[in-house]
Amino acid sequence: MEKIVYMDNNATTRVDPKVVEEMMPFYSQFYGNPSSMYSFAGIAGNKLKKARAKVAALIGAQPEEIIFTSCGTESDSTAIYSALNSNPEKKHIITTRVEHSAIKNLFESLSRKGYKVTFVPVDKMGRLDLDTLYNSLDDHTAVVSVMWANNESGVTFPIEEIARVVKKRGIIFHTDAVQAIGKIPVDVNMAEVDMLSVSGHKIHAPKGVGALYVRKGTKFSPFLIGGHQENGRRGGTENVASIIGFGKAAELAAHHLAQMQTQVSFLRDKLERGLLKHIPHAKVNGDPKMRLPNTTNIGFDYVEGEAILLMLNELGICASSGSACTSGSLEPSHVLRAMGVPFTSAHGSIRFSLSRYSTEHEIDEVIEKVPPIINRLREISPFWADTENLEKGYCSAQ
Ligand code: PLP
Image (cartoon, rainbow, N blue to C red; front, side, top):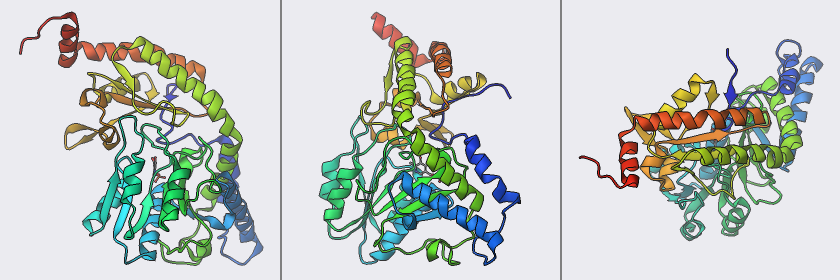
């Protein structure tokens, strides 16, 4: 395959070779079931224990507060169903309008089952309306779930403050920190969260492994009921090799965290400046200050995001768009809609998300290749012709 410029690290990441190396012996050499009694299986069991400590350390937790799952989505569902089972009489649940579908679709399905759901809005910069959130807390609220960082815009929410307010009301607080870990500091000693979801494949571990942090003392009921694995909190034989990989990836993420704030954010800023300088009618979606260091979401007016992606794909550049094809028409994402991004811009919004593997050479390549693509697409866009005419003072024929 030709060389790829990978700028879609919020979708998934390359598995770090050091992670692969750590995992390999646990497929064909030390393949014992960690629940078995003999010492051959104990090798896997011991390594699993170390992985738990490493994932815990990344978020300042105790190892016994970590439950391994199959993905971020499972962690989210586990947290919410556990909170509801712990408070069966409470029928009000709160989340935001910009959550990942793992929470969004779950809350919508709970709404169809009779729960009253408050979806807290965001402003045009993607910042959460904290007054609405705090005013919606009531005695019937079973759980509040607010993501730590948004996967599309990269905007981060003040989780420490929100947790403090929610906990003061005695309500269970969950955060989806899938996009936050490894990019910004996440510490459960600073943020009073009860439960926190993470996923391996966003931090250079393999796909198919995640974890849920459950603070000591929090009432918990399992989502997967079965064997006694994970201290009876999640049935199913552990995905040993992937968990070990996740442990290594967590250790590496902690090691590289500072690099995210310096090198990666420098490259992201260079990319953003370069594109905005060479492309008129382009704008960053989201608060430029309170956001992840690796993410930029840029709206290019009067072009279709899908068309941009197809042309980028021809050049081996991977990014993602802010619209999704639903029933034959391109719908801007619920995140951009919640932010009130105008349709003309939301349709042409592209997310570039970097990682510690991104290079300056790649950034230069994207800055060079994107402007001609946007120009070409605008030349064939009837809306663009109208805009140009308006700017020149002409009237377009209807
Ligand atoms: N939450 C957020 C914010 C995400 O970005 C994602 C994945 O994109 C998920 C949850 C789901 O994680 P997983 O793919 O591990 O199920």
